Every structure is written in structure tokens, then in C-alpha cells.
Length: 566
Image (cartoon, rainbow, N blue to C red; front, side, top):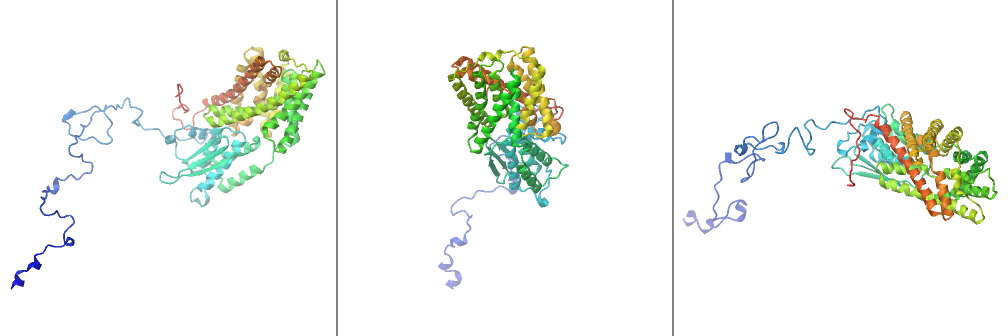
């Protein structure tokens, strides 16, 4: 009976396992929950105690209803200071940002330069022009490797940093890699590609260790890039690699003896420009050819270019000093030495360095200008050694020889054209471009002579104007041929190089007339900078008259804007 009514074992508390983990402990008051329909169900509901701002109404965005309005504002509602008529730049305008579409008719240089100068957020998506293997998408490592190899050939050939980046950008976008960013410095090329915001980027780099001047190879690389970026020509990755290997294996268009003869023709023509005759032409040509052979010998022994320039500058200076010792009145030794300097002045590197600086590539520009300075110091060292020896032997070098008048316009125009022709051969240009650059050099000298000698205008200003025309015509020629502009510009500035100012500056230093020598050297530096700036300005002016690819309504060309140094 006791067991039926329940014993102590039936009244012991339940175990923890039998109690719910969410059950309130004994002795606590459980809050009364409100009915289910009173619970807010929207996750955007305002917390308790937060007062909603009144909604705005009206086209101008003015507040309507004041504090009595209970309508909640939307996340897309403009702030109270926003006005549609005067929208601040922090907000997207009502009409939206116009989409940029690059026209296919414009050369790829212009299209890619436009892309580089455009903010990253506004660049249009890439349209894959070339097919890839098995149409499975671009092989990212191979595309990046091909891009770096093309950029290496362009940078080693003396192309400007902006044009090298434009070419690399064109190759990657043609194969569908739109999120790629190339970077070019003086000796290092790198490119990074990020497939998406959640994928790891792929980065590759390549070092340019050896440079050589071969504008024929440069033109072939430009044709390859033009075919890759063209929809009418199908260039697979394998085909691009094959053509690039052929470009590397191609031999120079001119043999060594032709280059030596071109160096002699350049020096002789330059001596005629500064007042030399037939005998001076022959002596200057012989000195330049001897210096060129000595430089080739030093290069074969592995000596750096600094010593090659030093050795190449000695024979023309030695022949000029030897003519001075003969006390001949019919020969101008200064013209012989000046002609030899014309064949050595690094005009190509100077123009490329200043152009990189003007386009915003300051690291590459500093490295190029430092290279020019070393070459110039090598030339100065070689000439000064010979001049000091000549002064010790009793040679009477006359600085006043620079003022000897020489007015033979026809002869000088022909000499300037011959100088440009020889310069083009030394740069290993294609034979089809030699005539155009020869005419361009003649035009440059005509403009300089008309301004500096006939118009009595400052030689530095006349040089800048003539170089600007060279850059303008060179850019137009390159657009017509879809080539690089360097083959049409570099050789044409040869007659404008400051050879005579450099020689008389070195002569003043050798004769301990530092004031005169430094003043003349300053003129030489100013002339060289005028050439480089004029060439770049002429190239930019040519683009001002041509429509911006993708611009709507004649929009101006984009460029970085910075004022007051910050």
C-alpha cells in the first residue's frame, strides 16, 4: 500500500539531463512575452530610442513635413545639402558617367595611351581580340611572359617608358587580361594581373641588362603589336612567340663597314655645317672612322661604354690638334673636332630621358639623364686629354674661330641632309624610312638657319622651334606608317646637336678660362634641353589636333593636373 501511494524514491528531483538548458532556474520570475504579432519582423527597423529623421520631398531635396513627418528615409536618399542643379563631385551625376568606347580606327598607340592616362575606375573592359588555345581562356603566365619580352625589346631599343607601357597594355588587353598593370623603369619591367577581387594576383618581371640601337628591330616589334591589337589579323600565342623569335634572330640591315663609313659621313657633314671645306670634311671623316673602329675594339674586349666614348673622342681631337701644329690657315681645326663630337653626342638617350620626365616617368628619366651625363663625361675626358697634350706641344687653339662667318645655305642644307642620312644608318633604320628622316633633317636645318642666322633670333629658341617641327613631322609620319616615331625623329635632330658649343666649352676649360668654358657648356646644355623639349612638345601638339579615342562631344585629353607644387 505504501508503495502504491508513492515512496521517497518517487519524489527525488530530476537529473540535469532531464531539464532543458533554456529553462529558467527555480525562484526567478519569467518575463511575460508580448503577443507574437507585436514583434517587429523587418531587419531594417530602427532600434528602440532612435528617432528617425524626417523624409525629404521636392525636386530640390528640401525637407517636407518638418519634424512632424514620420516617414523614414531610404538609404538612397540624398543628404539635405544635395541639389540636383549643383551636384557636388562626391556624388554621381543624375545622367551618370558616360561609358568610354575606344574607336577601332585610331592607332593602338593612341588608344592605349588614352587608357594609361585614364583613371582605373573609368577604363572600359577589355575586348578579347585574339583567340587563345582551345578557347579555354587566356593562359595568364604565357601572356604575361610574351608581354614582358615585347616590352624588353622596346625598352632596350630606346623607346620611351610611356610607349613601352602602352605596348604592354595593348598586348594584355588583346588577349583578354583587362585587370593588368604594367610598370616600366630604366632596367626593370614588371606586370601584374588580378583575375578578380577575390583571386590572388599574378606578377611577373624581367630585367633589361643589355641595350642596343636597332630601329629595324624596333619597327618589327611595333608591327607585331599592331597585328596583335588588330581584329583583322589573327595572332595566337604560338604565332606571336614565333614572330618574336624571328625578330630577335634577324641580323642588322647594315654591315660593320657601312656603319663606320656612316660615322665618317656624319662627322664630315657636321664639320661643313660649322664652316669647314673639302679638306676639313675628309680629315673629320677620317678621325671619326678611326674613333669608331677603336670603340668597336674596346667593345669587343668588354670595356664599358664610358671608356668606349672616351677612346672614340680622342682621334678627331688629335687630328684637330695636328692640323693646328701645321700652322695651316686654310684648315679650321675647330671644325674637325666639332665634327667628331657630333658623331658622339648621345642625342637619342637625351631625347628619351627628357621625354620620360615630361610624361611623368621620373625614375626612368633620372636614370636616362644620368646615363647621358656619364657618356658626356667620357667624351669630355677624351677631348680634354688631347687638348692638354696639344697645349703642352705648343698648339695654338683659337677660341675666336667660332665667330668666323660661313654663309653657304645650299651647301649647309645638303650637309644637314647628309648628316641625317648618316645618323639614320648608324641607328640601323629601315631603308624605307631613311628618305623621310633625311628630308626631316633638312627642314629642321632650314628653320634653324632662317631663325638664328637670318632673323637673328636666339640659337636656343631657334633650336627649340626646329626640334618642335621635327617632333611634329615625326609623329605624323609614324601615324601614317603605324610605326614608332623614333626612327623619324632621332636622326633628324642630328644637325641641331650642340657640337660647336661643346667643343669651345671644353677648349675654354683646357686653357684655364673657366668662365668662358662654363658659359659655352651651359649653352650646350640649354641647347640639348631645347631639342628634347621641342621634340616632345611637337609630338604632343600633333595629338591636340586629333580626336581623343572614345571622347564624346570633343572632350579634352585627360592628363594629371597639379598646381603650386602639391
